[in-house]
Each structure stands twice: as C-alpha cells, then as structure tokens.
Length: 81
Image (tube, rainbow, N blue to C red; front, side, top):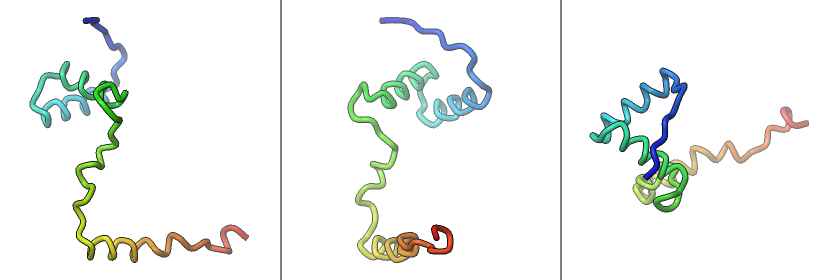
C-alpha cells in the first residue's frame, strides 16, 4: 500500500470532508479513500449520486415533472433571432 500526503487543502474542502466523514461515520482517511475510488471509478462505475433516485417517482409524478419542464423545450425567437 502506498501512502500519500495531500497539501494545501482549502478550509472549505476540509469542512466538506469533515461533514462527509460525520455523515458516513468512518475515519477521515476512509472517507477520502472512498471518495477517490468512487470518483475515479476504481470500485466500479462512476456515480453522480443520482442512482438512489432512479425509479423512485410514480407515473403521476413523472407526468407532472414532464409537464413542468415542457416550456424549456421551446426556443425563444427574441433571444436567438
């Protein structure tokens, strides 16, 4: 196993890692390793974190969403003319 040292960790990144560590309930080292493996696809396919939502909508929710985003399919001629 190789050891790495990561320098110049910004305060925001350090805080985010600490929050993630607390959420996962594991060590900071394990949290960083897990995030790196996941982000680089080492332990399988890369994840955007949305898999947990897949298939969680009812058909009615899906139809409602599709109706709500329908206006975004239209091109505004004034903006592109």
